Length: 366
Ligand code: NAD
Ligand code: DAU
Image 1 (cartoon, rainbow, N blue to C red):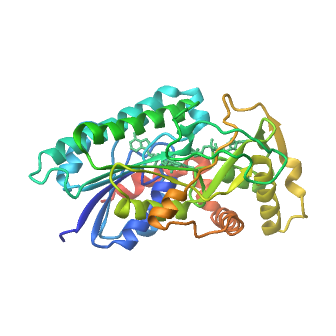
Image 2 (cartoon, rainbow, N blue to C red):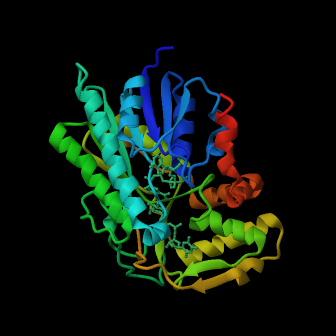
């Protein structure tokens, strides 16, 4: 079959990537979706079980740092769009092993950009009808003040805007900032049609349980301690992952070339307050006495360089493309808790490491 578009989604076996792949495969049967993922510890093909047999879906196990392989895929599938999510994403890991973050996030992005440039510039129509969409994070903007820690959200007067100067603090955010600059430089230097988005913290199904929300839901289920960094006063701005995926769909199709869009739901939470909501929800769903799991809260040494507050102003995306989040936070957190408690096999496979056998089992048969 001739597909109307051939789109690479990198990092499609990860948390957000799997939601984006699912949305595109189901919404656009006339697009071929090519999921390019190295399957690091964070990649899990079980996240895509429901769509893996779809005729318009292709999975390729590959490292974005492998420039020759990226070129080969671009040519073989006549790729005209790239949605780039593959990255090392956990701040704590970046503190222990910054090199891996520089390699994947900076050099991997550069390798993908170069492969796209070589392929597209060799075509008669060159960059016409092409798009390189880079998914970034609000962490590149640094940290905001906590002007009113004892009040209600918003916890400060400042917000991250598209014009906010980059000021990354962790090796993770420094590597993402660097990759954002490379992407924009390919527009300014070579005329590549790029678009960049910076999103706030995502939550929802299929998130690797090293991140706060799935880790804490699982620990509560198992009666294990909940390690709260510092005093739990840091503020994060939470968005349901499917709302992020919808925004990516909209911006991929309607976003203006060379623009940056911030994505967020104006939904700030102090960590400790969010943790209490998670505890109350899990205890209620499990039928535990109210407040039972509060005793699991354990204050531990703070994360080095822990950014105090993130808060995204996404009004440009709302005003220009009419995007808004579809879920209220209470609804989103309820769905998320129910999903992790209903999908204990998924969680147990991830925490035991069994999920890494899935690729060998599924793909060695083909
Ligand atoms: P994740 O860690 O869950 O998944 C990352 C995926 O990338 C995995 O499937 C992994 O196997 C793959 N990958 C890693 N290195 C690779 C390489 N060298 N080659 C090919 N594939 C590789 O990540 P996530 O939380 O879904 O984040 C996806 C993207 O969104 C990242 O770029 C991240 O910076 C950005 N982002 C995440 C959040 C969030 O809250 N999770 C918020 C804003 C932006
Ligand atoms: O803001 C977007 C970013 O959100 C993404 O770019 C990152 O890829 C993603 O990992 C996430 O980064 P955070 O560092 O904000 O997420 P994390 O879930 O690791 O932590 C959320 C907050 O909870 C943060 O303030 C640290 C704190 N925390 C985290 C863990 C894992 C704890 O107090 N205890 C924990 O055990």
